[in-house]
Image (tube, rainbow, N blue to C red; front, side):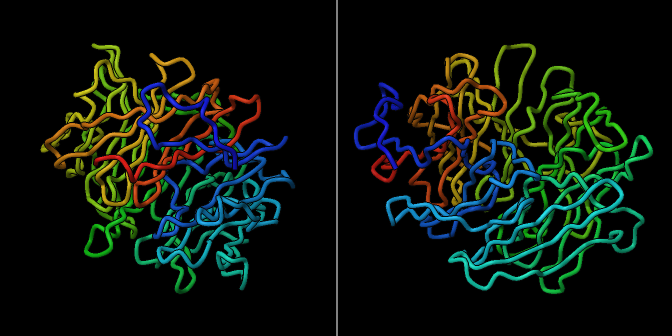
Length: 413
């Protein structure tokens, strides 16, 4: 690790430091900010090398996931070596890493679910899917680089392409693996589920524990092998919640009114049943953060869904331009990046107030990443579960690297 005073913001509070976690010729970065890759005590987490902020090349023999040990000076050691390793999730108790080895192709191939202790011991294969998903004629391919694990550690969700490589207008879907079996079932399918971003609610009890936040993208077109032909962007984005058995699909009241568009970044607010999204608006040139809870389904009406409660979290910030963001596990702190009005981007920390009512407050600038803002160099900030460390990516050196912001426990909120 290396201290990077040059990446601090001029207004960063005293005692806060930016450190560079990775170096070398291989591009390295954090896993997507919604991923469950931290131990609950905030002492260890996963990142990866020979990768980009949206995943990795499954054929790249140099790609591997690393364990970063915070207490050991942010030291790094590899936890995977298999070509095709993807979509890791840490068990809620922080003991195991679940991940997949992707050897699939449209209509064939093999997907392997593995588990290993965080110290590298007891690596085992839990499940091999080399035939159609049970109860369907579909075989998964184009495996999504993010999985999500339920708060009790009982289920793991993963999205994929379901086409055979020959026919057009084939579906995408969401698989749920029962880790006690293990078994797998398909709970969601259709041509608009091409970029699902599945995220289990972090609640540890009750029905909310079974809820998965999912993204629908209406109007995208794909080739028979799943390659993108036309991306509709925010105009087609529609955010929902579904139970992990495939029932009770609900709406989140965001976007789709001709003025507001979901950027495609959303997450749960800690362990609560509130979710947050980032939006773009046409009537004013802003990128806002909006907080809501799911409501009963009513077509695909977005913010016009009946009964929707919306809390404009970023209304206390002048001309907000927030893009990627995440919260701590308590739902009290939020970190985000800005792009439109900050060359190279800035990373901000803010305090979350009463859910559904209060805006973000106590805005604190943490860093200026000097990112190129190319897609392969997105900043993607997130927080440790305890909220005392923030993390981001940057290609400021010419090579993508992973960074951390420490000392946040000294801040007043």
